[in-house]
Amino acid sequence: MTKMKRSWELYLLVFLPVLYLIIFKYIPMGGVIIAFKQYNVIDGILNSPWVGFRHFQTFFESPNFWLLIKNTLLISLYSLAAGFPVPIILALALNEIRNGLFKRSVQMVTYAPHFISTVIMVSIVILMLTPHVGVVERLMGFLGLPATNFMGLPQFFKSIYVWSGVWQDMGYASIIYIAALSGVDPSLYEAARMDGASRLRKIMHIDIPAIIPISIILLILNMGGLLSVGFEKIFLMQNPLNVSASEVISTYVYKVGLLGANFSFATAVGLFNSVVNLMLLILVNQIARKTSETSLW
Image 1: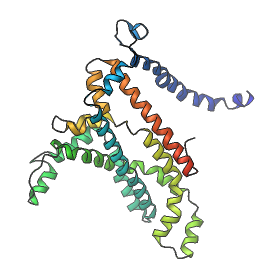
Image 2: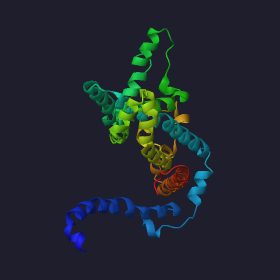
Image 3: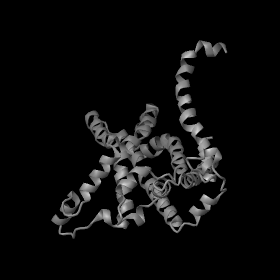
Image 4: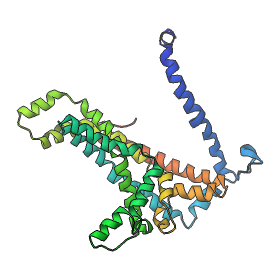
């Protein structure tokens, strides 16, 4: 108690974010109960009739169920495979640059896209790929290639979504790796230089081991959100021509659950999504704990 009184300012500083988490994160969890009810506004949450797992059964028996799972998993795994190593490579490359002005310029250019809103980003992508007038189409015409409606072909949707996201977030995502590399003992580089180690060997034996722990933690967190594909960007890029490749769980919940005012169904699908993500998080964390010394718990 004496320690709390002596450091009351620090406890007050922590109190506000904790209060935010309780009010906006934990208390709303009570609303999950409507996933097992036929919720209607008039009766309210407590008085709405119980239906058990009917909404889950409806979702599992939906003809779109496997399409949604496939699209969500493919986009998530594609994003993870493409987006996870790129910030690491960028951080390693920036760590090797000795020209301060050039290094800061590269950092500014790579960080800037992260601060562009999703709406603006999607608008840029659509304008660049617009048939006949887009930059990409004009370049293809200059090279003698036929015009292609990239946004209208399902087979291109995942690549457009993933690589535009990699370009937008790779600079910002590399910050944490650059911070980890800045904590490497300079004497290790001096010893490697005296031993005649090349840059590649210094990266392999000094830099990479230094960022492995934080890489494992981020990989575990990313695997824990495998089915949580962002709604906003996919919904903005979606159109009737590419919907077979772009319809994911989040957009399906919005269309069927929220636009149709079927809040119980939307909650049931969201709960299923969260439970699967939690199971993946626990599984990957267990694997990481057994195969390395780094894990979340």
